[in-house]
Amino acid sequence: MAQEIPKSPEADPAVLSPTSPDGAERKSLTPCEITAVAHLYRAEVYRSTIWRTRLDTTTNWAVVTLGVALSITFSSPEASPLPLVLVGVLIILFLALAARRYRYFNVWRARARWLETHFYAPMLDEGDLHLEENWQKTLAKDYITPAYHIPFITAVGRRIRHNYLWILLIQSLAYAGKVMVHPFPITRWEQATKRTDIGPIPGELVMLMGVLYVLSWVAISFWSYQDDINRGERRGSPKSDSMG
Image (cartoon, rainbow, N blue to C red; front, side, top):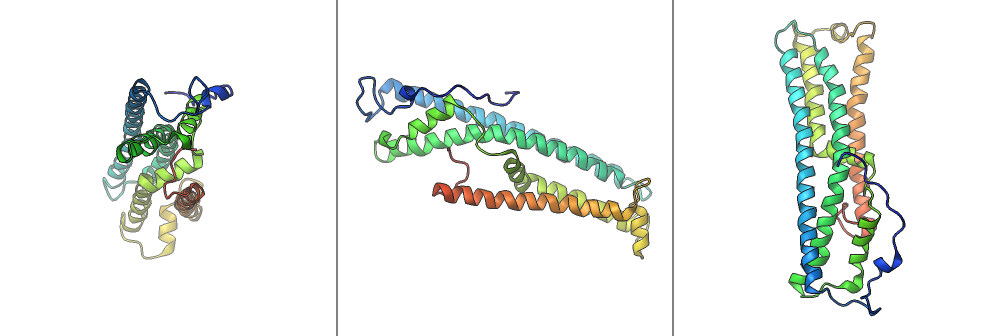
């Protein structure tokens, strides 16, 4: 899937009605319908697996890129720490790409989890699908009018918490370590600011931007964590990635 999920026309109320063709309230599904739902579940698990693989690929790109920058920067005491600064641009790019992919992955994962919770679990535990709860209507709406379940900034925060915060911290600590020890250990603050100069940009400004760089990702990560908690509380469940 290369483009955003398009919005479809307004749903037909007759399609969403939890009634059978004769107008009576549905109590169960036919064997053919159960088979179709089972195949639907397999498809959603497959799609979530594919997009999970794409997420891992993006993270691997960020790790490899950071590894190359570390190798160049620490190849000799006289090597410049600038590659560790420039690699931050690529890490931000990979993070944005990962967040976009995560929004797709979250749709397929939420649908599969919804089927597990409301279709398979009641059928295995009680032998009843509880169609009177209209869980199938919620799933139908998501297929008729597909949309992302979370905003982009929430996806960014989740990816930072799961993977990218460690990548960003390693990048920042490696940069600070390079400045402090190469080509010789610093003994005065002026030496540190001199080593962090980037052309006409003074070292003090570079350091300030670095601190803001790290703090901004930490803030987004913390905000998304609180947002996930609030989303779960609004649904009456600790899970923050369910349907709805």
